[in-house]
Length: 70
Image 1 (cartoon, rainbow, N blue to C red):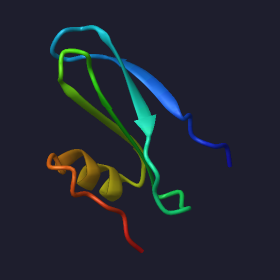
Image 2 (cartoon, helix red, strand yellow):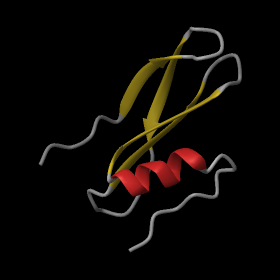
Image 3 (tube, rainbow, N blue to C red):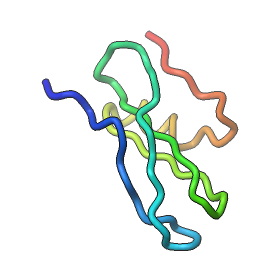
């Protein structure tokens, strides 16, 4: 299994500038690899790969309280 990238770059949905997202620390599992970043304009950017349920849960948690448990 390959390691996920530590950084990814996306276009901001608000201002279209590039925004870098950083791989977040999670348990040593392959269920999810969550990424977070904030554009220079202040718009937060989330991204994740992995298990459909875990990714949906992460993308819907807008208050930063999301965590992954086994």
